[in-house]
Length: 495
Image (cartoon, rainbow, N blue to C red; front, side, top):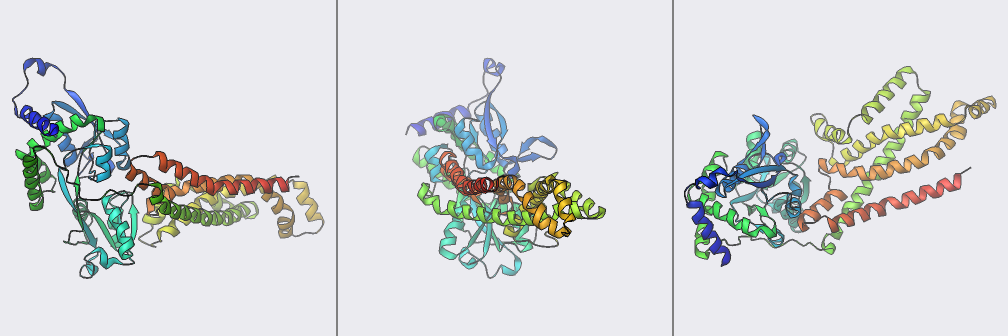
């Protein structure tokens, strides 16, 4: 009731004329807001004409709210998955960047009225448009979406009900390009995103059936509920005068369904004397026990990728080191170039090139690309360890072995190799622990490993404390036994 009275009061203020001279002389207060320009239009994106500015319908909405409150909007860039955490920290007053309304969000924040209704829709290749009309038609198939979203939660449910295989992405571009390239069989995302992707990358079909409906909201700290109510009053006023419809029309996201939703929302506001909660989805399970199986599966994936990549790195690194010591000038030059190029470029870039850059020639599965990317990268570092270890073996020992009539291979196998291995064991162990942590980067090519699964967990529960501690514990459990084994071997072989 009090919220309804406050809304009516602010509506009256917003409808009043311009402020008096004394008020006009004061600089407007700032409404600090956070969003993710990397998420792109039509939500928030960098203005191509002036990259220092942002544009999008959420940008226009914040400007409308700020103007209605007599404030000046001030933008802060933040990763989409971290917007809620930044709001809770007090980094800004409001978060708006295509944030989805859900029950657990309302439990932790002061959430605005749902100002836009989106539809979750399936995108498929034209050849599958008649066969695939719902998630039930995708049993055993790979379906792409963005992590930590309503669509991702729907796919997790479909995984249990229809054996759908969810594939999580960090951006909304590659799901559709991978769909066209055959890496995934469908994409489930908001119709706003799907229609924009179709204009950008034509060649797929958006199915008309609505899988689910959701709403975009603005998020305020719990203690700023009064500011939320004032913002709601401005949004309602702008709905009534057609400003919101004009904004949505200008970004191509207005249709008859949106007009119907807005009319129904205003009718419900009028009948309730305030804003009603339109959240229709159950709160997701957020307990440790509920997420433990997913975290353990992700930890197993992390360990598998790390072990396979390290085996590749050791074998290839050993070959590179041997080639640089025993090879001819051409071989040494080529191998040195490989080592310098790989060590001088980010592993993240190498993963992108392997998975996306080479897709025109060879479409590597994500798991294989992850193993190859990490293995090829760490092979360069391993080769330097082995080369220095091989060169550290005293030359007199090598000459003595040759004097005794041993072949070069026998010298390497019986004298040089074993001693070099002892010297290389400690840095090899360090490299494996580093690789274990660097495996978190493979989430950019759709592999849901431990860190990515933890990020999804943290986004859903609204805190990094418990998920972060669990993630750190699992990494320690994976890495400490190897470190202890290496120390025991070093002690045993110490001369």
